[in-house]
Length: 181
Image (cartoon, rainbow, N blue to C red; front, side, top):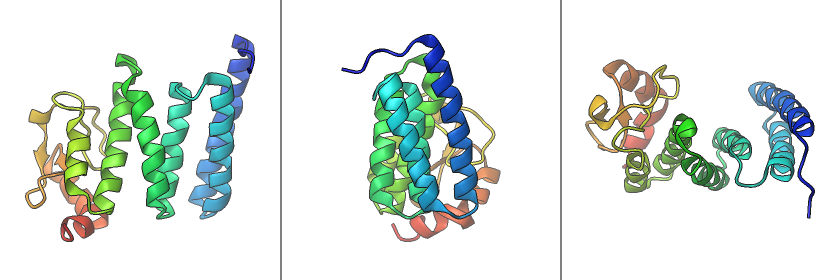
């Protein structure tokens, strides 16, 4: 059994993992996804040992690793990481509502990419009535209620807060999946 870390050790681990996360982001941004993956895996292992497998700290790294796997088109692995993050974040309480919505939206987008439209819609609706994100990744808004969102007119499985966000998401992402559904 691993002894519990002291508060000072936890702070040190958080700082180290924050540095490694920044390094992983930079590495992925430069195109070296394999090296970024190794950094994220190291972070997940470290956080699991120190904070536990069910901690929100660990969930954040599962989510980040899932996002990397999407970029690498390793969708089965992305799905697994997002499912882990959703499970942890959904139970984490009111301080983590936004984080849970982010992981649900990420998982829903993997479902879209793998042509599971009903699963995508249902994953998004787990946040109903008041904890759903706009599907546009760069939307500046926080969690929204279902009445504040509109659905894609074709597939009815993707939610947007505005016509502007739908348009920004359409060409670079949703169009290729919506047309195939």
